[in-house]
Length: 330
Image 1 (cartoon, rainbow, N blue to C red):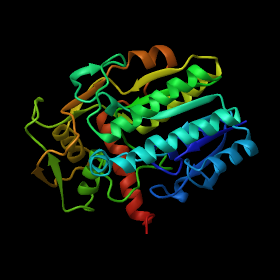
Image 2: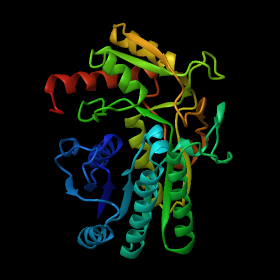
Image 3: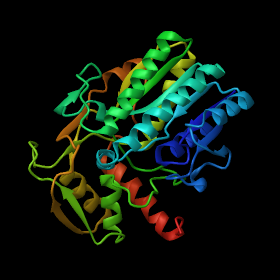
Image 4: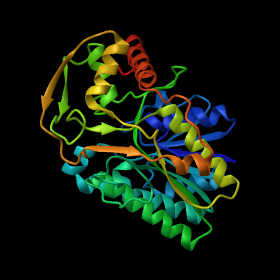
């Protein structure tokens, strides 16, 4: 039976497609290619251009392929953008997820893995935050993802349907084999922006706020290598196949790095200095958020292999250099 990966032409989704294929799975990708790239999809996978909110199309795909599970990455992910366009985020991340979930239930797809976010926690502080923490998202992005988690829980209570929602912390890095990486133009992710600046693709970069109540005044985040994250999804699929109950789990390493510490790592690994400007805080950014990761280790038997900041940065730099040499986005 096949696995449907929504958003599989995007950054995290394309890594998941490779991970599934490496594990011998049959993969169908559904992506509207608005922010994803057809070339990023592994050639062994089948790419279908379409929208997860198109229930008729999704139901046709389910009828045709008889999916065993859906792994749902499709959606919008930029926190400041969500503050400026909340309705767009509630459409892409919540309303369309609802349509996808209904199509899954109608089509008899009983396993669902959802790409959620640590943004559901809001202002958590430097102490690692557990899944039992109060949920108080600070942005429409976080709220849109939390609403989908709630829909999944209610659906699982009413139907023969089980899910795993993985709350990502800050995803970074690229495939160590150089097959895919973060490729979207105008990305706002710190490590990608710093790598672009180190390689001369940007003249300078901004640090948004240096007056946060943290050790150096800049925001602290828990950075997880995208390959480790994809492996966590594969573990979640195995868990559901073995009859595991629905589960919500953090995906992080349990330690955080500040913006300035990340910039130092990029400078160190690249061997290049670059200009860094101080800019005002961005709306919706919590000062610090770090994962308590005990639950995912216990329930999914997941262990990270690439949990080192310089390793994450090194793979991100290698991919950024590859994009430049191949001019792959032209």
